[in-house]
Image (cartoon, rainbow, N blue to C red; front, side):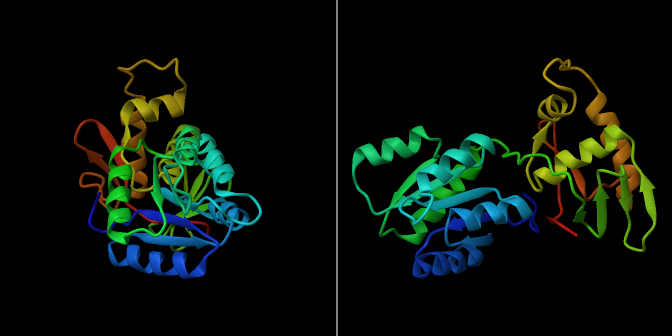
Length: 238
């Protein structure tokens, strides 16, 4: 990851004296944190912006952490670490079977949790949120997928082809994450796409000419060693 990219961590815990100090601790170690007191608040937050990993308390009022874990790990393929005061082996197994990547017992050492977060993010595949349908802002521009256009900082509009708009949307769904050519091609063209297809490279080349100050030295859609691409920008609703 680039020096200016900070992974976003969602902390879901009804105990304020846990979620807020943990959020502060993770921010000191280079992460952006989003805090939610229950599953409903977490779901509302995730509708507004993607995150890269969720830390979820198992025992919460209303929808419990296991139910939320099932939804996030299954539907969104989002990495999840569960927090619980329960020490029973069966509880840990149940969480892992629902898709959790790790399980931490309360009370915990924040440094151990930090190490587990780093390990999960290293081995986790890119977590793709459901495709967004509304406009999103990045790097001073707004992507309007419905109008297949970019709106620049001074209000100028740049038209996008359907392929360019769809490809840009894939990057905006997973900011900061390395997406392989094969993964981009699968998401863009479907599983029937051929591995040697140059569609991805051609579309990214055209996108760079439209969004990069210098397409020959791209700073927004960067090439990663091993055959992938990454969007280096924060993404938010305008």
